[in-house]
Image (cartoon, rainbow, N blue to C red):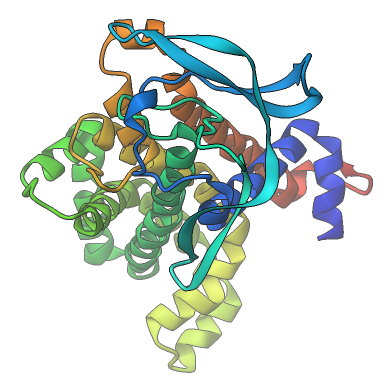
Length: 355
């Protein structure tokens, strides 16, 4: 760990990416506490409300605050500020009751307004007056976890099938590799859309989540399986593998306990780079209406619902914020994968850290 922290200091971009990912996952874990509202709480009088938090006003001076606004044109939802109607943003305020992790009943939120009914829209509101920031936080629970769960399933399939192909060779190798090549030859996006379209659309949010995870895992394993097959094929000739076979240790146990640890560095990098691919896959499905549906929310479904026309994008540019979160997350994982590749590869190491 000390060496890894030292390696982070050699790559500021990777350090920033690490901090960003930690913050994103902390926000995901404590979404109920950080979000000022439930994702489905609607304030109809404040539809398409722009981001309202500022840092200075003549009345309150410096500090986070909200200036009230009122609608002057409901046709395009044009707002104007009300002079002298400023409210200080306070921390650990009472708000909507909720259950933290669906277990602990609480009323305290990280921030909010007290003494007024005016809403606090940190990143604006949507067409139904729902807080976009709260919806992004709750949506991260689907978008960020789907990557980890999908990678776990995908890598388990890849290690099992690729390991068996590389270990046994012969007909087993031929069958598994031809099976994986069949999926590789079909463009991944088209295969994902086909598999999802043949399934029922009348699913609950939980069913849609599991279906998306299974589809993305099923499509994602062949490339990793081919890589693992080649590595296992070279490692199985080592003496310690021959000894394990002579001792009668089961094949899968040899693969998982003795061969896979020899390629752990490559697998860690593959996982780090595969997670954003799964996140993007869920985003594409949700954007096309084949993924997460109401009342659940994900980053992809937010982009689908809000950025429906160019006029919406021009009049309400804060609808692009979910896409910005998606872009930042994808870049952060890629920069971390780049660091892990250099850190875990002995050819890129020297006594002083990273070259």
